[in-house]
Length: 381
Ligand code: NIG
Ligand code: FE
Image (tube, rainbow, N blue to C red; front, top):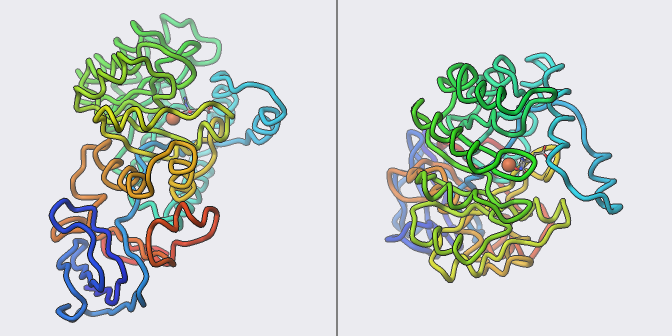
């Protein structure tokens, strides 16, 4: 089934050659973008959509999510807003609830969260394990995640499992747990942070993951300075995520690497932490992505539009830089070139905005501006 979108007031392709077009049209066919050009020259298709002068952008690429979990931590959020600092130990609360939940309950919660993300314009989602922390529960989390996305990440090294000995748990994560999870995962991740895994343990996790055929990404420098970013660069990781506390040497290392810095401003919002210095990264030439980090603890938003508004208001990205960061940037963080841009051959993942210009995503924060979403050429909203 083919679809033509006509009368697009502003078509932001994010493609280096095509750039931004006005009075444009877009044809979707066979799950791919088939044609881009002026409305006057647009070919016919099975279905026609009149964009009525509104803006069209690529579907958002949300490259950092933890969506397989059970339980509720809203009380932890309320306590935080009353002054209790965020601590990674809250992860264990979710682990207990997730282990106790049946597959159907986890699958239903996951489907609901994915639906919310779709309705907010996200068409590519990365999803991590990390709330099972046993061989069976981590493998189950990744099996469920694989049902909804190919971008699955093994994060058995989220924290040491409750009651486990740290050295024994590290041996499990890099041994039997990795063997059970690798078939369901594309990526290996580790929470490299005080209170989670130190530099040596993180190196062991990433080495074992790479040996099992997984590609590294790292939770780095979220709660304080540490070795996470340097380790990500050393391993040629696709992305170092959070990057909230960086030294000049960390920025230099990122700038001279192929590792994307994925910033997660919803976390700083929800934990009342200082925002990362995005300008410093961009000025140094680092590739910057922005993602949600949707999870029940540090940040329970699945809204890329909200994160765009934060990136602009709080991290001083220009609206164009923020849009790039949640499309091409997210794609770079997942080493994908078929998503995050609209050009012939790219995936037909498209967002029609209820606005004439994507600057409205930051200009009108909190307003539902996602008018329609197509994924693989099919309407999903
Ligand atoms: O990316 N930093 C580690 N993991 C999540 C938070 C997990 C939680 O608090 O449940 C994050 O922020
Ligand atoms: Fe995370």
